[in-house]
Image 1: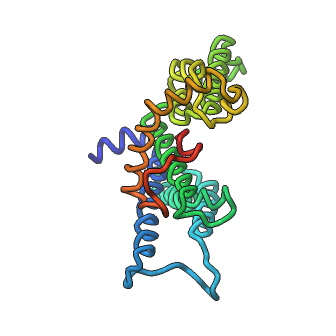
Image 2 (image 1 turned 180 degrees about the vertical axis):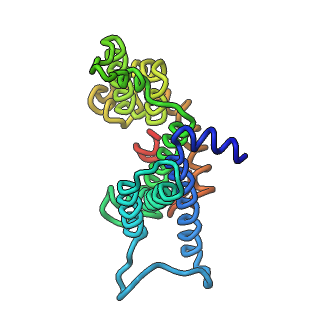
Image 3 (image 1 turned 45 degrees about the vertical axis):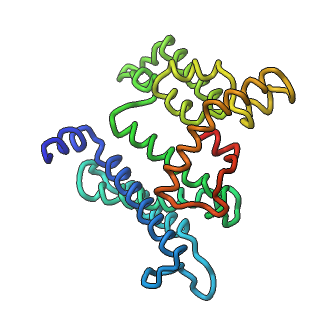
Length: 263
């Protein structure tokens, strides 16, 4: 195990990313355990931080951890030792606390246990998926091709640049069509983004609002496909998330929000 860690993580330069990933996941699980214990009013569990009656949300502590870890990482020259691993862990832990209250930042009000609060869980899951893909060694399509410039200053081949920009455009269109997970996968696998960009948008997505007129055949077809395929998958995803993050206020068989449907 030690040899594998050394050869696949340390020697490949992934120690900071690995430390960030582990601390991020641990931070999210820890803060969700804490808020669920507080919500259940467990007497022996420490409650919210309220100095002078002011409720300090954990996003504040998250920002502090991110600043401490980020600035420390900038000052550490070695990229494969314990100091950089600690700095990356602090940054990852802080990032988990911040993204766990992403909905509060987005709406500028405390919506943690409301349906809108699911946005925070979605953001955390997206971050875990992206970091996990990067940790396995996967890189966005065209990444290596764009970095081929050598000491002579040769630019990346025109063909590689065109393919990379085409794939990026496909991923952007896919995201605008409300297919968040497909858009993320398409960043790494170009065929996925191109196919998803051609197919119908998710009802309620920016693309559908801009391009599908009310009562149009495309909108009706998109709604039918959403009801038949996407809604069951989204409900299964929400049940999985709630098993980890807890149920939100008013959770019952309700239709997910547009953002939650997209994710």
